[in-house]
Image 1 (tube, rainbow, N blue to C red):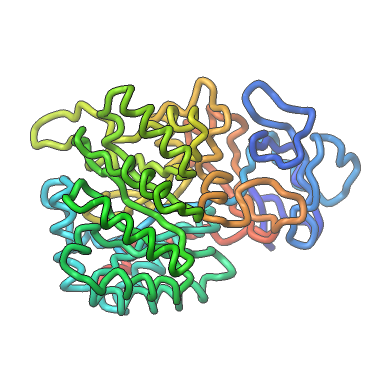
Image 2 (cartoon, rainbow, N blue to C red):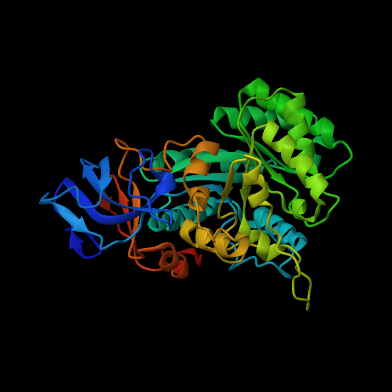
Amino acid sequence: MKTLFDQPIPAESYVLKNAHVPTCLLVEQLSVNREDCLAHVDLFVTDGKLERILPAGVSGGFENYIDLDGGMVIPAPIDMHTHLDKGHIWHRQPNPDGTFSGALQATGDDRSAHWTEEDVRTRMEFALRCAYVHGTCAIRTHLDSIPPQDEISWPLFEQIKSEWADRIDLQAVCLFGIDRLDADDHFLQDISARVASHDGVLGAVTYMVPRLEEHLDAVFHAALDHGLSLDFHVDETLDPSACSLRYIAEAALRNKYDGKIVCGHCCSLSQHDSGAVDQTLDLVARSDIGIVSLPMCNMYLQDRHASRTPRQRGVTLLHEMKAHGIPVAVASDNTRDPFYAYGDLDLIEVYAYATRTLHFDHPVSDWVSTITAAPAKMIEFDGGNFTPGRAADLVLFRARNWNEFLSRPHGPREVVRDGQAIDRTLPDYRELDT
């Protein structure tokens, strides 16, 4: 019999009694809000769906229930920036010095030597099993798309997307350096067509290259021609001269682009003066760009120098962006590869890490939206909040408040999909030995 915290699930219809949920994720606000941004509620689950949410105690004598004893519940989180094709290669290709340049070289070497269909499938599926056990319900992954790798990874991703459709919703973004457009006149058209055929997202890594404006216009035109959303890796450096985020916002306005745009990283913005920051963020807000920060990877790579303690955090200005009305999120990014040696695609770990790094506290406010409602909106996924009538895809915790939750992010939790508890056995790393 399936159980939740050792309590048997009593029937197809039951109540999760005595729960605490983030008020910012309630579609129907209740008059039970507390100062710590949690509401004390009972959640009614019927035939795998979240039927309704009522103030705690209203369920009264309902016979089929599980008492959570004040434990917290959140909707299944959404990981909007990952690299499933790179993940779990550390055991055979570590980063020699922990730097960004070392990561580029090591990953390129590993891709050339090992990234067959079988190899990429094995590592992708391992990563997805980890994410599923931790509670994630949707993932956007970037796929290295320089030929000939695109001919392997994109058709394979389409297969895996179909195979995992009832567990994790998947999206893919093509990934290439913007300067590739200097040397290949046909590449952008070819990759845009491939991405469109797989219902994917057009993306690129932007740096301060001589023809940046021209290349950005070409990418926006390709997106408009093929009806594609955009997702860029932006200014992943602490070099204060890097300002391609501003160039992207200007290109969006110049090309009258009205699709979804996401920019990830944006680390160098933290090195700009307040005037330049305000100017850039005004443009970003006007162009309706969403920002995703990758705190674990950025803290690992940025300001790394041999035998010297890092001085700078390497994360972007999420508080200032939020104040400008810009949508913001956090995500996992790389996992056990040369760009980030650790991680397990656990968004609860990411959120706790982000809270400590980016000061998502005092008050906690609605920052949990950065792994739920905000990414759902940015990548157009139907989820991320407590909507009656939607599938009961939830993560339940023994932690009763934010302090307990953030102090012990790896503490006891249960993952519920369609109202039923899943097996939370993580895959063994030994499966990757071959």
